[in-house]
Amino acid sequence: MTVEPSDFSAAKDCVSCGLCLPHCPTYREYPVEMASPRGRIELMKGLAEGELQPGPALEEHLSLCLGCRACETACPSDVRFGHLLENARAVLKDAGASGWTSSALRRLFLNQVFPRPAVLSALASSLRFYQTSMLRRWVQSLLRLMPGPVERLEALMPDFTAPWSAPPPELPAHGPERGVAAFLTGCVMPHCTGEANDATLEVLRHHGYRVLTPKDQRCCGALHLHSGYQEEARQLARANVSAFEATGADVVVTSSAGCGAALKEYGDLLSRDPEWAERSRAVESRVRDVHQVLAETDPPPPMGRIALRAVYDDPCHLLHGQGVSLEPRQLLRAVPGLELVEAKEPDWCCGSAGIYTVTHTEMSLRVLDRKMEDLLSLEPDIILTANPGCLLQLRLGVARSGSDVPVHHVMELLARASRGPDLTGPDELRRHGLTGERTR
Ligand code: SF4
Ligand code: SF4
Image (cartoon, rainbow, N blue to C red):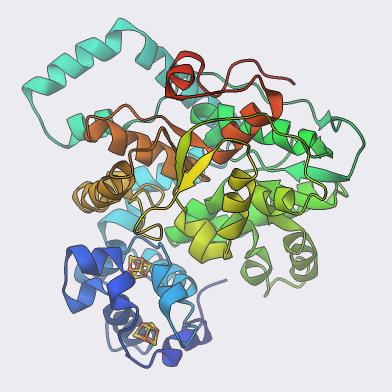
């Protein structure tokens, strides 16, 4: 199923008012029209109408976009920018336009690694061995002698050193059961932010949910969609629709903002497939970000005291992609002793954007440095966020800033609060961290 001209009809809603421009990170860092949402919409219109041909220049302008969707939130005409961008990238990819969308490495990862849990596990085990052995020190010393892209890539690699074991297919609620949640683990998260997954399971159970984790779930397809690999994303969506409808759960829950935004658009993605359109809409209607589910728990369960100064950083795919910003703050404010402070620009992207840190390292780090300046100026004891990609990017930002402020998923803090004992300051946080004993 290829992209059709009607898939670009949203571009006509743009009235070129420019209200989105001040909200666009790439335009703020590189103030030329073609690095702005309005400029990109013009390019996409040109592509749709055949006035512009797919090619390296067009591809570079569109690939510089973070896909953060801050322009959507700012737009008074409700232009669905994210949807347009996905379609434009699909056209470029189908045309074999250039380097980045159709590169052999990207194809390999999107087609052979992310959709195959066994291959991903083998790769994660190899990286774990590399990161915990002398090999890494040797490679790093060698790379220091010839600085360049490989050295940068090595330094950007997430931490794979803590192996995660998949939970049992069913975990009971702690106390009386309020509902049944089916949990999306994500494809990469189990390997580099497994503690956030464990914390999500624990907090859901603490809030009275029985949690089902279907074994046959797959990668959500978000990375595929953002890279123009729509057919591959549809295949993954069908597998997930099938896996999650079979659970019969009340809600399908994720603690990854990027995955949640993708799951919430499965209905659109499969709308032209007669066999799957209705099924995907039915599953999509049950998808909730974990903060939405927990914030609705009435009465909320008791929480231990955590006396820390915390700042919450909104992931773009939660704030702009799903319109969820109050719920994480509501949950954090309910933790006794926690002081929640607000950043000046909570809606500024962290520069993670899937694999943007690797494909556009310089822009990604410029965007990240501005984010870190804002967050660290608040002198927090802890930085919290709600998306694994942002978590890793903010940890990179902390390291680049020479700071040692810990960065965790909101779920890790809530799990700690639900578990006790009380955590009464930064020294204890440093000594004990937020993870500690696990209860599953
Ligand atoms: S998605 Fe983000 S980076 Fe891309 S045009 Fe919109 S605001 Fe700018
Ligand atoms: S705010 Fe909306 S209508 Fe105005 S230029 Fe941006 S995308 Fe177009």
